[in-house]
Image (cartoon, rainbow over all chains, first blue to last red; front, side, top):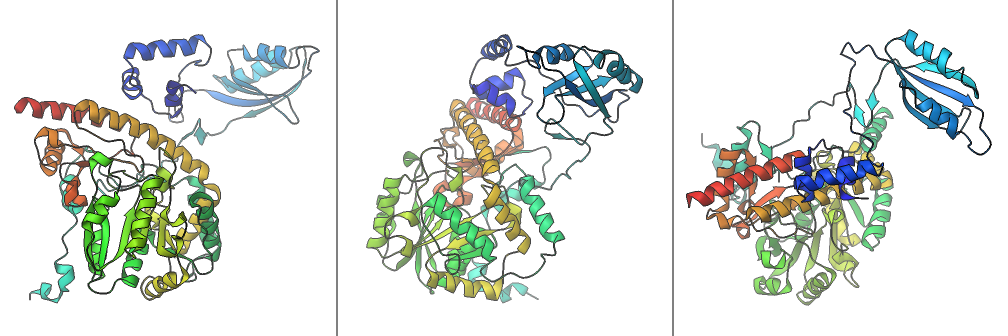
Length: 160
Length: 391
């Protein structure tokens, strides 16, 4: 794994200047490496992990279990890619077990998500069934705890 | 009434820890970036904490055997055999202690007769010399040097040796220098110990945090097991400093002697910490290695920065401490540390807190976040360049 990828994975929200210092590269080199990673399809994007529970974000999130018919030659891919292209779809995974795709959907309201499922998703040729679960509360996202703030442990400033 | 006249002479004469003095200066300041902490910045991995909660729920609130839970001793026996290539019987060759510090204290109290001499390398952990003194022994420091990357050499041991030496304390990798010894050097030390009939107390608390080469325990060398008390614990590798849990392994007669002191003073280590330690050994390897890898990368960064700044710094092969030479600034280590703290609010511990041989150096702990390390390096750089201009 490239050092720059390792550094990004460590979760430190370093800017390019800080990354340059750690990796002993010039800022231009870091920019170039990032551009290369983007070009090769390794780095898809960078997003903040936000806790929007206290914001008036108005986002409704749902997880949908989707059963689909695999196709000769392409398996699940064509349909999975087609579903993934909808803006409402945040993530889409092929799963083992009793359903095929697990689809994470965002919508501005319950009605919008419901409409997406009933009008777009379930009407697709090859979709056998859907089971929609609305998310009520988030406790942890992408490695970050949400409202469970560990009490700031009182650490000594100097210790042997 | 002058209450101090009641205090025992050997305690009154004991110097206060240099760290303590420095701590009091730092504690009064706000927004300090501290590289002065001798512990991991990670909290204990959750699965280990959770196992202690579970133990509490199950009503594990009682005394344990003086030697510690047999299940933990078995786990330690397996762990030490696998990672240090020396095997100890769980029944009578292992004792669980309240941190390695207690294990060290037990060994001193169980082995030292008044006036016995104890060799230890210096700079070193702050409690070595006091532990010897409190057991009425005489401390014989052996210097280690930057030119050897602070490895302990036989030449230094030979030069420091005096008749009456009974014990040799080792701490490899070493706090505060990060120095350690390769196999050949350990073999030479072992040979010296046999020649001078020294019993070795080997504190290997930082052994998992060895970044280059393989850690060799002196206890694993042929014929050395009978001559070594192997001391280890969970604080550093598993980020468990506050749990106060460690252990000693050695010949059964010596463990029995240490157990006598332990049973009349501490009785046993906290059962919750013992339960957590079992979990750490059984399932903690992955989280331990992840933390070590992070220390490794941070070490490479901060050591490189110190050298760029002009504070010559050897590459510490183990531990999470860098030990840069600050003498190029023209200041004594304490003046440098205090100046840096006041001007830039970065705390490093003056090397002399770890013994006279730390003169000219400061200890910087790199078990802290990248952001903090980057910012600390920038501030240290600014401070050092400022000092150079004043000259």
